[in-house]
Length: 152
Image 1 (cartoon, rainbow, N blue to C red):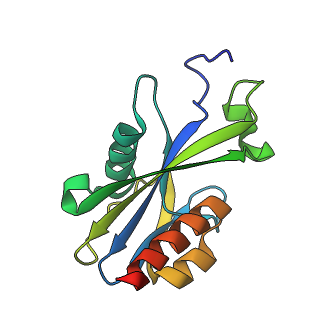
Image 2: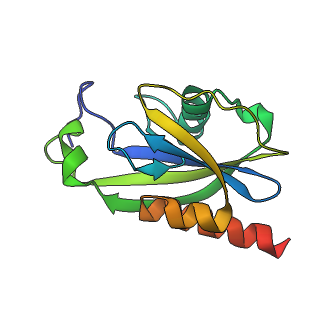
């Protein structure tokens, strides 16, 4: 696969931010409106998934991984890149690999949105957040986390 600096790397992170009480933070993308998600982003050249997760968390919410219990779930999924976003990747790239992380906070903390990426935020119980998440991978990550929270 040929990759240049102008194309995104087809490896990304998903960081589910949640409270100890099971409230999950969802962010609404600027484009397309109505697309709700957890913290996400592609790896930059030379970056590990864990480094990318910490960077994206800071960029998209203003939160540091040190604000709570940051966890690498050691889980990843592959999915086809939607046609609407394929132009961001090299011509031969059709799939993305997403690594799952979470940040458990003791309570809701103030969030600083990146205005170029997100227009709104919501703290929702994990079941409602899973139902509102726009991507199936995000929904699955929230459901897996919620099952863990319920098991405690």
